[in-house]
Length: 153
Image 1 (tube, rainbow, N blue to C red):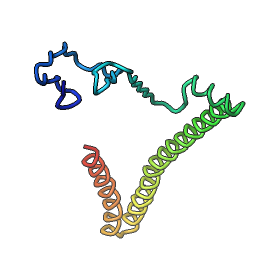
Image 2 (cartoon, rainbow, N blue to C red):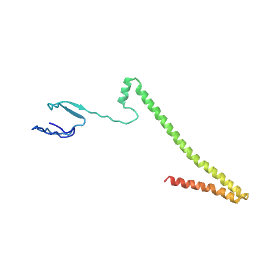
Image 3 (cartoon, rainbow, N blue to C red):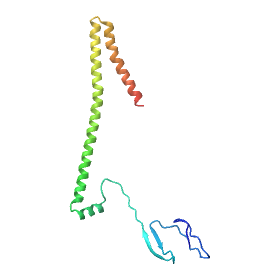
Image 4 (tube, helix red, strand yellow):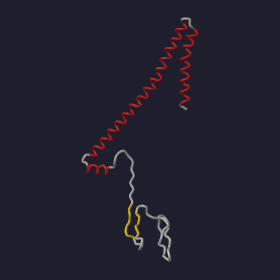
């Protein structure tokens, strides 16, 4: 009996009878003696996959059996790293909010000073300079607002 590959159907040779063909069991692979065709063993394949920041309870127990107290240290380290990550995220979010708030306050204060200065200049008789001092910050605020709306689309 011969096969053309690991997943192919056996082919008869010189009058051999074909055995019943079953698809291979992926977990138990039968090992046959090439001369007699008799089964002399099986190979069991086991796959384990997991995802997560901590080892399983069984793995933690194995660590603890090698180095007593290691499982507790691993969990404590993970907890402290998680606390640190949360603190860093909180700091980043707070800094972003502060930056956005200041990015709105400072231009508004500068614009207000320029408008008040323009009103004062207009009252003192410098109408062209005063009008330019009033319109320039208003135009700048309008452009910044429009640009922000376009960019957020």
